[in-house]
Structures are given as C-alpha cells and as structure tokens.
Length: 84
Ligand SMILES: [Zn+2]
Image (cartoon, rainbow, N blue to C red; front, side, top):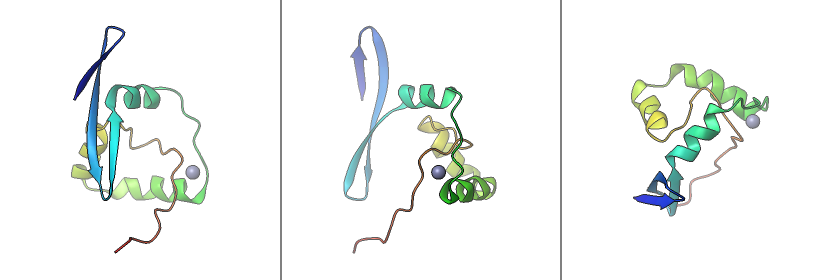
C-alpha cells in the first residue's frame, strides 16, 4: 500500500502476524534505525545480540525488507506462550 502525506510518499505494508494485522511504515522504520539509538542492556536484548550473529541470511533479508537494522535491538521482550 502507498500513501501520500505532505508530498512524501510512504511505503506501508500490512502484515498478518498470527491474529494481528501489523502496519509497517518502512520509511519511518528505516529513519528510526538510521539514528544513533541507545543500546539497551537488558537480558532480552543481550540475548538477541548474541543470537543475531548466528541467524540465517534469509532471516536477515526479512529485517532489511522491513527497514529494520538487525544489529540494533530496541525494546525486546519475551513473546510468551503461544495460544492454541
Ligand atoms: Zn532490552
């Protein structure tokens, strides 16, 4: 989906994630990650940083496609148990 806001074309994707519809503005996401983000030192983010060194390139391609810098975790938390 494309939207025009104040002469700026934004690229927005709607992604089905389990029972939720997630709207992703890729340009805003890229802009967020282009800034000098303060790194979190919680256990979740530290675990992610270590695990991200070992993920398959196909996973990294998804992050990049969504505008996410995989090397910059921000506000990660446990997802919890899966609902059945
Ligand atoms: Zn954290």
